[in-house]
Image (cartoon, rainbow, N blue to C red; front, side):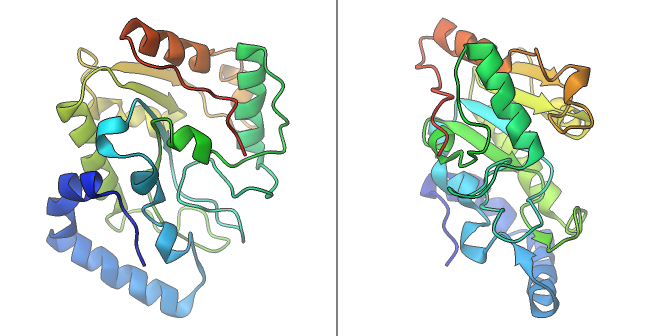
Length: 224
């Protein structure tokens, strides 16, 4: 059974009712008949279920879900408790430790604790075929998630968007910098983290921006 917080369902209802979404559903049904796909159906909208629309404070954008067994859980960069953190997530944790002076083990990877504090962990594409990165791109998910980003950008104020890598940074066009804070850096993958993700201090900077607005900062150490 699909789970999505009612606040997000109301915001995204026009998308669910749009013709492109009906085509997307047909595509997903056909895909699941032929291939293993991730995450499980009940977790596809996990980011929207864990972080209600009116409680979002920080937005982190990913590209598509992990495509190996047991990893994808509907929150970008996150893996279920007990699953080894993939390399990009290990680099995220390394930057948190360096930025905040913490000592989070880099093998931990469940970011549900962030989501419950108001960090929307949103992939641009919400599903993927097993072992085939990017296999569900350009079938409608990007239109859906762009609508979610635009709704936040237009209806909320003072959000902190953390955009890592060229794909996420391209979403900057959807966000009014007069209403929100946009921090950009290279992607945390091993191929690019040393080009500026390490040392970006996005976690302390995000908390400083939240504090300036009188909001509770994020406890970035809450990783399961």
